[in-house]
Amino acid sequence: SYELTQPPSVPVSPGQTASITCFGQRLGEKYISWYQQKPGQSPMLVIYDDNKRPSGIPERFSGSNSGNTATLTISGTQAMDEADYFCQAWDSNTAVFGGGTKLTVL
Amino acid sequence: QIHLVQSGAELRRPGASVKVSCKASGHPLSNSGISWVRQAPGQGLEWMGWISAYNGNTNYVQKFQDRVTMTTDTSTNTAYMELRSLRSDDTAVYYCARAYCGGNCYSVSSINYFDPWGQGTLVTVSS
Image 1 (cartoon, rainbow over the protein chains, first blue to last red):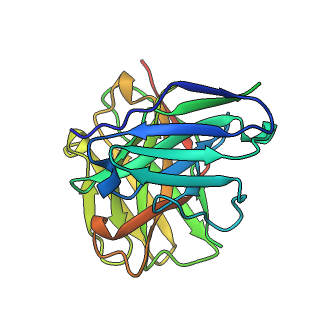
Image 2 (cartoon, rainbow over the protein chains, first blue to last red):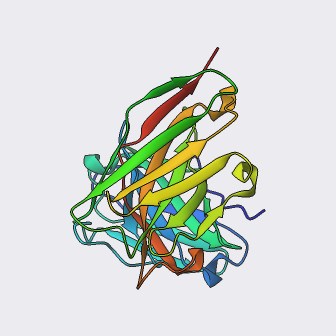
């Protein structure tokens, strides 16, 4: 079955840029979505179709996807961005989620 | 702006069934779909499958194929997920999420993304 691999944790200092990667075979040929989940809350869509932001998502969130790696980039990271982030792609009509990355704002 | 509200927490014995509801407000579900995603304690997200509120088509992940049924009631704008033969490892928070398609949700391949999500329903399976 298809797998998406994310680093378990990514530390970042406030105001710096955080990059969260998601690896999968030929991932660049698929569309990626990213979901943010804060403790005790439901997941929330922050990026879809590799690099599109839903309304209400700050411009500091951006995405890219090429080759085998997709990246969620958060520019000027704020304390409120501390959360778990999950990438998601489709394979054989099945939604596959990465294992999640805990973004820690130091 | 669609909003999803799920039913409350459930406690079940092993071997029992549970049915979780997901009521949409603010927008009809009729041209969308509903996906169900679960999250075991401290774990990641696991997609269980989806149902099109447009035409009733379903896709279930193979591991749940024999135990899950997803339905919708467009008259009440509500989706349901029933999971049978519960085991202790089914203990999780179950989320519904609107499956957005660019047009009508004909099939699972129409889905663009999941948004918004319900608040989650904790299902605990314990003897």
